[in-house]
Amino acid sequence: MTQDVAAVVLAAGLGTRMKSETPKVLHELGGRPLLQWAVDAAQQAVAGGRVVVVIGEEARQAAEQLLHGQASFALQAERLGTAHATLQARQPVSGADRILVTSADMPLLRPETLRALIDTQRRNTGPMTLLTAHSETPRGFGRLVRNEAGDVAAIVEEAHTTPEQRLIREVNVGAYCFRADWLWTSLVELPLSPKGEYYLTDLVERAVGGGLGVSVVTTDDADEVIGINTRDHLAEAETALRGRINRGWMLAGVTLQDPATTYIGPQVSLGADTVVLANTHLEGKTTVGRRCRLGPGTIIRDSQLGDGCAVELSVLEGATLDDDVEMGPFAHLRPGAHLMRGVHMGNFGEVKDSTLGPGTKMGHFAYVGNAEIGADVNIGAGTITCNYDGEKKNPTTIEDGAFIGSDTMLVAPVRVGKRARTGAGAVVTRDVPEDSVVVGMPARAIRRRKVRDGE
Image 1 (tube, helix red, strand yellow):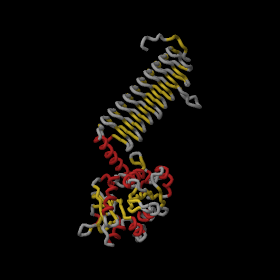
Image 2: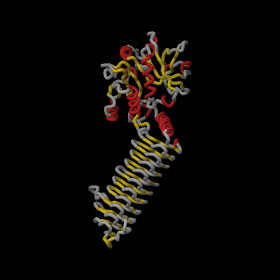
Image 3: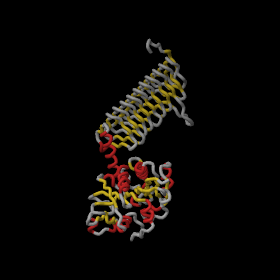
Image 4: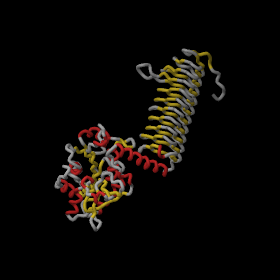
């Protein structure tokens, strides 16, 4: 059974100008490898068709782990140019009528642009369609040469251009859609270039020489055609990506106080009427509800926030905030932290692998780890759950309505009962019964609290 279209992503380049031990396609843009961007765009463009990545041996294992079955792989053992690389994918995409070819070092190409290439090639009676852009800074791209009638005549690589051709501002971006039968036949017949490689761009001259039409799709988005060859290019792409993402969220009803210093990852989700202040980073799979206020100077990574949360000058990693939580400044949530509705967490507090119940207050200078904290608990300044005994982590439980005095040390495993209180500086080594008051080091009970009506 044939398929309409398959995609080939060229990713075998060494990227020597990156000056790195890491293969170029594994360098990150917006927190994701370049290769991931290219494969995602290709997947969306071919809508369920096959995606094959042509990779070098040094990057193959890491790429396979990264993509987790999103694509299959073809190895380019000997780097003999883009045409030779494309040919390595012939078997994995056999049966497809059309072949989309893109490059992993063009991470900002949009799926809709690649779909335009495919749709144009479907209408094209000739064998290929290519993507071009008009640029005053050609960035090393090959020039598109047209004849007197304005039709495509050839692509000339920048290294081989004449002085007149170098002035051409219509450039070849390096994305194509081919009629499959013509592509595979033509690739094996291409001549070796003066550089000793087989160029995919030479297919243009072959098609024109055979009297076959070459169609063109032109992108007007200069950011789309930022190719990555150096770390300078990578930084330029980061700026462009940040602008693209930030504009999208502002159009969706999110206020960004200073977009130039706001970093929002591609997998982040934000609710309407949320305000993001300057120097704030939202990373990974972070979800933020409506009417939140984040920043300034805040980092939120792989965390989920409900509606109406306020987080100032703080760091959240793998945390969950229910609605109406207030945090900061200078608070830190580590993985597994869960702050339930209405929790207040003040400056210089840290929570790890713990739940703070609804309405609980943790004002300042406290550490809570491996703990279950009930509702409406007051955690005084300097409180520490001593959860690690040198061998294992131990749990602390503080039940509803308890009051933990300043500088209390809770030596886990330990439980503090409902409405119990600890005095300032208490070292709690044993469970505290509900409605009790304990003081001292080690803490001892001094009385039972008299519970008022309604408590």
